[in-house]
Image (spheres, rainbow, N blue to C red):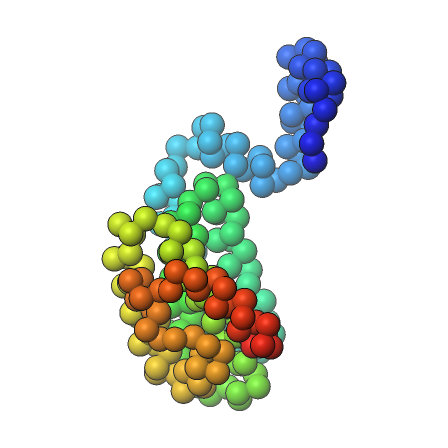
Length: 208
């Protein structure tokens, strides 16, 4: 929404007390904005510290979720909730590196439970695997937009994910069927036009 000059002028004429009252009223209605302003203005924790805390949360969240692997709908709901926490962390801190790193970390932690997942019927885990493949593609696309100085850390996680995929026959087949080239799980091999490749894959009815 664009604001007219008249509207901006009217706001600027508010007294400091009126502006404070308006700000606090708006913050009560927007929890995310409130957390973002708190982080930017007075939060003693740095972005790195908050990212480290998120790693610990992911480990605990996945460990808890994996108690319910047999109930795939609930399991996936818990995983999506953990992913939502990452999204909130990124919006609050504008942590672009963390956006990729934490999502790859989450994928890797889930796939560390391949042994439990292998006991599930294919149709039970299909939605989970498609969800993970979509997250992998999104992370790879984001990596190409970040500085190459980060690639070494991403490559470590991608190598772990690559290994875990090949340890899971169902997931490996779904990756192949949905156009994921395993060579792309190394930063230097990610195509420049991967975003267009993914759009084409989706237009053909895959990744869903």
